[in-house]
Image (cartoon, rainbow, N blue to C red; front, side):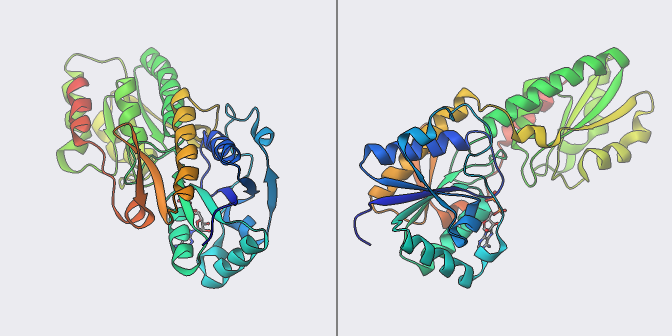
Amino acid sequence: MGKIKRIGVLTSGGDSPGMNAAIRAVTRTAVYNGLEVTGIRQGYAGMINADFIPLQASSVSDIIQRGGTILKTARCEEFKSPEGRLKAYNNLRDAQIDGVVVIGGDGSFTGARLFNEEHDIPFVGIPGTIDNDIYGTDYTIGYDTALNTVVEAVDKIRDTASAHNRMFFVEVMGAEAGFIALYSGIATGAEAIIIPETSGEERDLKKIIEIGNSRKKSSNIIIVAEGDKGGGAFGIAEKVKDDFKDYDIRVSVLGHLQRGGSPSAIDRVNASRLGHAAVEALLDDQKSVMVGISNGEIVLVSFRRAVKLHKDVNHNLVELARILSV
Ligand code: ADP
């Protein structure tokens, strides 16, 4: 592959607040380095359908504070086949795109890795998902905003729960990971946190809540990650309702409001750093890697490792939450 003159940028898979800040950083860093930029709309579907738009520095004005993604995102079955990826490759070639920045999650990186095994246009990834469950990076874009949204919502639920002596099971996003649940649980002083990563005593709601109730708490908030094996907030509430007959039990599923909203300052800064780093990586002839942030520094992690390895929650924090809820 020769020198990079034009890069493409797309958002793929689930959207997350801060993706626009990343698009802006990619575009502006590219322009700063004398490159042309092409926006690819609707994720990999736009690559296969040649849904391309030119981006200039001014195209990304006034978007850093906006949730969602100006390029739209989509899921695309066709990209999962070699034929689909070949179509995408031919379109990228025709549009003279020499390198691509993919902003997305695990699935998007799997597609990018396969593409780079088959074709010579380098792909670099930026982790964008509210779940924060990507190995090799401390942050994914959107996580901090989603966390703050959840904390604001749970604080409100706490007010009404206290007023009525209620026990609330609040379901938050996290299909396979409990990062949002664990951190929001600590931040809101939840009585218990139920996440896919825990087992045994850590999940013994009856025990946890009995300890707290020795001093007659007026409310109980239990945060449940949607992907928890116990069946989400409704499933767990159903299982324990006979154990807590004194409480009026309610369930609240926060749902898609967690994906929206103006990105937090942290997400904007991280997205800006990662967008810049992704373009630098392409200029350094990198391919098939994700840019991440580890211990405050930018790191490169192969797509293979980012997807294959599992990022666990910090179990000291699970213990901390338990201690602080007495
Ligand atoms: P995320 O990137 O947020 O994890 P998805 O899992 O939906 O979201 O993946 C986004 C897109 O990435 C898919 O619609 C598909 O085009 C591509 N993709 C996902 N998994 C694969 C795969 N195994 N092979 C090729 N492409 C994939």
